[in-house]
Image 1 (tube, rainbow, N blue to C red):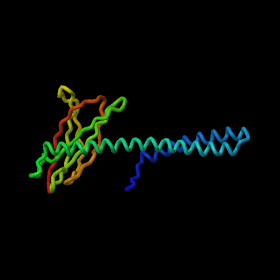
Image 2 (image 1 turned 135 degrees about the vertical axis):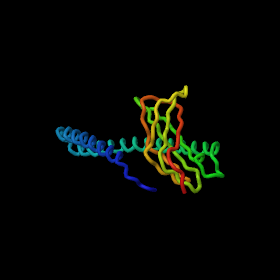
Image 3 (image 1 turned 45 degrees about the vertical axis):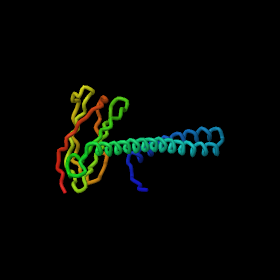
Length: 179
């Protein structure tokens, strides 16, 4: 299993530890005033442990949901390639993109997933993604930073946030397909 340092997890754990320490000190002081120092120590340890466990549980659930969404997007990339791809030629037809809008309270995160089903050619460039409403009217256009997608590679690229959810999209490859 590959372990990757995630700065967001580090800072959430630091916040949970700080909250745990505040609660630990408060409970220890309270029980010490009552003359029950041992109980205060137990409560202090329990406060820290509970805060850390709760925060890590929330982060784990979030990570599992993200991985599930990523897996579904990659499966959709495979399905679209089977429908539209050209396995006999190296071409742009073998590049696929999926946009997965995720509604988050006051905005929508548009997650972008790409795949290169070519066998020999690498794509280097940008992607222009146009989000469209139900009437196929252009809502906004997002151009990605330069990316490289190697033959057979699937990956998630940086998302875009917008104030409302829209179901449709189109895209244009702004780069080169080379060996």
